[in-house]
Length: 221
Length: 221
Image 1 (cartoon, each protein chain N blue to C red):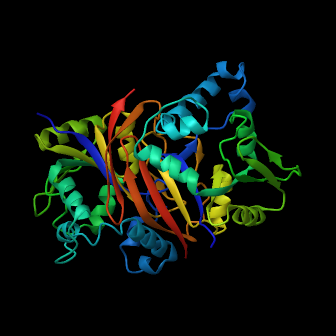
Image 2: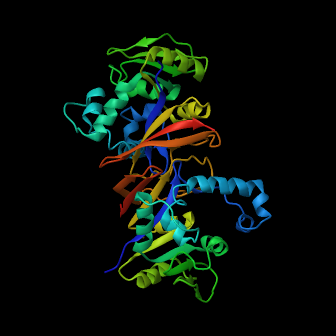
């Protein structure tokens, strides 16, 4: 029995899931960090994700340290991880992650990277293996489904990759942690959505003290 | 003791509070209604507002007929009306409303219309009087505060007028009925928001079966 295909992101109230992009090398270099554009990026990203970083699950999984909050936010973060049998991501997300994830990458499952480049699988300690798929989003999803077994496939990001799957009618369900911040600019989650094709059903809506966790089923129309 | 200044709107998950505009005369004319652009407008508007129209309060207040749903959605709609001692709206919202509201306009309080045109106050049956204010949003708000007494002032719309008040730091609180629809295009609520100036605090988040009712306090920063 196949699992669901879903995505799960944190979104600002005005619809952004990331600030205006800055060169990824700058974010993770000592010189870059004194660049005001990078500092601005970090500030906005930290505000958006403020609910997540204190959670025990994120701290464990990203090797940020012991302890952390427990409660609805933590339960949801952990459940999202545990339901995921394989992930799919775009090339830019992988490139950024390669520079920022701990060596023991935080997936602990197969991850299929949609790219135009051929590359051998890359196994990390802790169970994450990155597979590079150069023949399109449907192939990547097919391989992820197979790898996931009866668990779900997460389309991890970025926004452009998520939207390709939405517009192709391949998403069953998604969750948004709606963060009480306004970005004004940045990368919009639904920029270019084929709105005539996608009908949503509100499945769950769970407020924590920090964000509102929204879950929608996607139906074709 | 002065009340709060707030707005309350229904927003699509991707941030729109109205479809792409069509000429308002067309929406309310028999010929216009056979125009595909107008039909598309009506379809999208109806999807966005699907939670509201069945509610007993809206049916009563817009003279749509007897009966209707009761429950959280209805309670929130009624409470929003009852807290409002005066409203402020932009000229385009007034122009559209003039063509669509029942003669007994649905405010039952003073309404201050921000406009460049001088016009005498216009009293409607049922207690709504429209006052036309031609010297700016602060004057309109000052007059609305005075008229509202200890009740709240609602910035009724449209998006552009709401955003002028947000960016001027004049909003204390706002509510969004987050509707499970994607628009893809239209009029965005927060287009042009001065994000560096506005900090939000999630005050309440109340899911109904149809939408999620979100309330935020606005703090300067």
